[in-house]
Amino acid sequence: MKEASEYFVVKQKALPEVLLKVAEAKRLIESGQADSVQEAAERSGISRSSFYKYKDDIFPFRDNGEGTTITLNFQVVDEPGLLSDLLKLIARYEVNILTIHQSIPINGMAALSLSIQVLSDSTDLSAMVKEMELQKGVHDVKIIAKE
Image 1: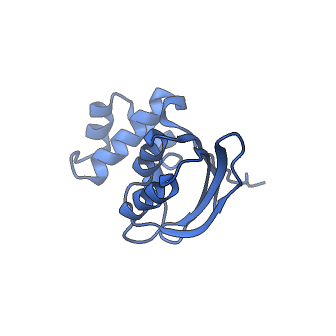
Image 2: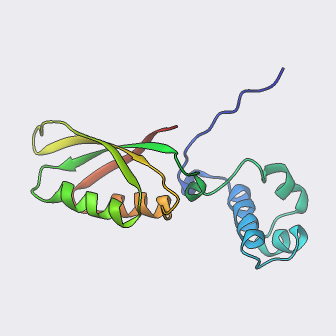
């Protein structure tokens, strides 16, 4: 019986070190900075067997393919211009905004949900999410769906 594939979006700090090292080894190979799996594994501080065990199971968030839809959910302070600033940030990463839903603010906070589509020109989405988390007035950024 074949196991169903399940995917999780996990922040880097929650991953075991070996998985981060496998991702680094893959980056070294893909960028041409390492000529072989052996060299990439050594430079990353893992064994070749660890690399082969996990290589197909870990990839950077930015590797999402064109056409992928991602839904983000977060809390925002009810402040003029904050949504506009977020939309400008998203535009810099060249993703397509599909839907925007903001609740009516209660006690100065509103729930915001954005569905975005990855395009061929889209840049590093993990950097985009990190930048959103650092935006003044934005709290509790979560990726709630990926299709």
